[in-house]
Image 1 (cartoon, rainbow, N blue to C red):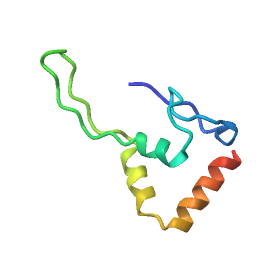
Image 2 (cartoon, rainbow, N blue to C red):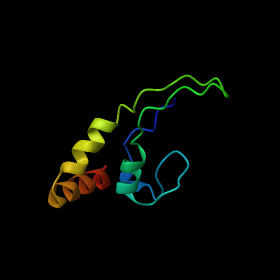
Image 3 (cartoon, rainbow, N blue to C red):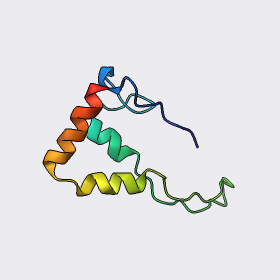
Image 4 (cartoon, rainbow, N blue to C red):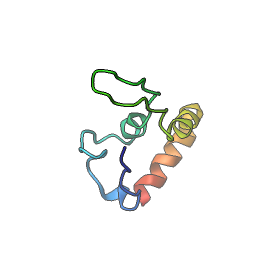
Length: 78
């Protein structure tokens, strides 16, 4: 588990996510959605709960196009 960088300066960035794999803010938002993962007996990794971001992402998905655009405009202003 790791924390992503703060949103300060997000409007100045060209690439998003910890590895810079996207230029698209919506894709970056969606990439933070993560369902629960079961434990893996082969790697001995414990099961993980769903991402804390899931509720926010689901709320974002329900927004109108106008409201989504307003959020994107706000993020680009940071």
